[in-house]
Length: 636
Image (cartoon, rainbow, N blue to C red; front, side, top):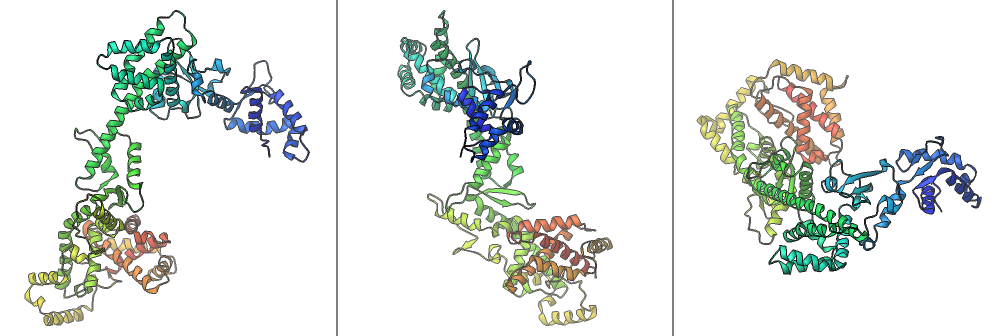
């Protein structure tokens, strides 16, 4: 079915009259008569047959608002919708595109212009640029550069005319036609031998290379463009000498013929564009060197960098790399580095989450090295933290499950690593760590990597990774304490009487899953702030435990009862350990809702398992409320 919308009809009529200017009166008469000849069954045409002017008025304003056309009214005409002319830019673009489709036909004549194409384009629909001063708009793209479909009037120096083109044709198609024009010039009036002899005299010892370039222009002129774009040294030197020779030869003539003007236009284009290609090639080499420097920096400690640290990197001369490449180029480079994946092969860079939730990057061949480095750095603080924890417990004649069970001891190590070095814990939980190890291990010409982390495809237990043996650690702690702490009978008796005297106060240490134990007495202000937050968060008529149970049902909606209980237990353990660490480090005297939100959000983003839960709102609210409960319990 034929399209009967106004824009299609205007375009068809413009093609019929071969002009971008459509006289409204003539168009309405033509469409009205054309529609009357259509069968009455075609309802779309019947609207044009009986309501031609009304339908035109209904649709023309939309086309004007969309920039598809404009109504031009002469001074002696009344500005009515059926007066004046409609200018259609799309017709001009179509005609320009067709004109340049066969480049060989343009070799011996000047570039098509408004005059030769018989087009008078309104100023708002064509941008006028000067070859000598404005070509940077097409080489160095920025917000001022024209859109690809924009109509360009390119003015040549002196009185050498202009070219009517589309922005997308510059500089590629422009240079192709210019090279064809130079070939036509060399074919004419023995110009080839004249130019070759002149160049041989100026560039002595280069006769063979000169003949090769001249032959390339004569036989494969478009191949010259790729060499210009690469800015190869000798081709650039060739055009530096050739362009002035051609100009001087043509300027000696008293009368310019069409092919002379065509050659002058071409030589100016080549001369200007060659300088831009040269500058572009030099800039590209500089940018490539800067990115090579970036890659070298990524191989150096600390091996892991966030975006801010990457932006701050400098080269050997102290120049910021961001002064060489742009922020956009850096973002695109990083996107390619982390996003280019082949089947079974990791991208060049791996992205992990930093301690504050920021994006961090590490090269895949350095991933295991980074993990080993962080394990070594965490050994001492991890051992010290557990030693201090157990020393406090033993002094208080208490104990916890990790002291007697290797499985519980592994869980304790995981929780402590998450507190001491959350980035390391993220790396150890990342499946890409093992994949990078396997890939590097099987890569051709790769050095054999002894792994401290994996054995037979499985990650080693944390007690082996961090070289902390449960029994040895307990023995070391008891060795430093008075001798009676090593005698179980004495410890059991003292512990019994202490519990009896204290009535099992919760001033001890973290053991049970639903308890949070502190060593130091907190301020009254911290308790007050916790109670205040409880009254704000817990709905009226509900207790804190009842609301926690409700939130637990919402976020831990797993069918498997054991898996559900394990999830809740892990969340509670994570919250106890992190809150305890925060109180010790920051010596908080009061707690705020914003602080709880930030802590729960940080814990969720660090844990892939928690991030995958559906009801994130219920999970985070549960975490905030559970921390409030812990703060209240420790004051009792």
